[in-house]
Length: 219
Image 1 (tube, rainbow, N blue to C red):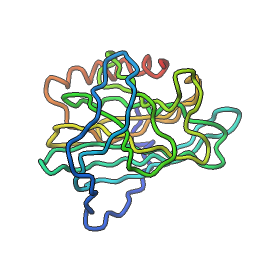
Image 2: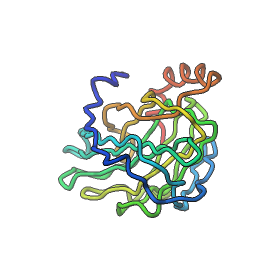
Image 3: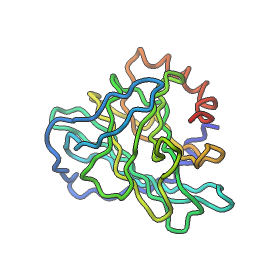
Image 4: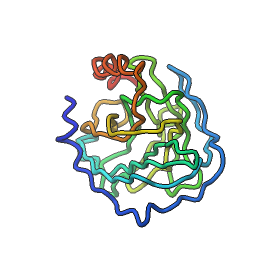
């Protein structure tokens, strides 16, 4: 199930001079509350230097056809030497339907502090995020409204969702997938950048891996 190496198929973007992204200032992201849909008001990222920028293609069968697109995954080093992590989803114009969620796991910051970047490109904003108390390290970025409508439609792209952290090191140990409305179909599992877990989080990582299948069935 966790054949991350088989599913990456990542295409690394060229980063000219590790260009600065000019959104300086303090993060105004919101703290995600466990087992609660936390509304996302939209805010600017803390800004910094882009050190990783990956584009990964995905496709899965849903709505009687194929949903396909790409996910951009970015790591940014802030002025204080810590990192934030960001994701943006693109749904191809010929996709058979909408994407309801970007779902992440094995992501262990000291605080779950996230939001979407109001200044980023994209025409669809994430409306809420859901932090799971179990499995640990898992949260969903939701494109559906409370009534279950909306979503990231074919031919559209999302605003960039970011998680601000005080991590001073990172690796590619976290995972994500994408789901249709109702979670009846989902993409393969892909690896993504994340803070290097503190020792206390390593035990929770093992528990999270064991419980991942249950999480993938929840809203």
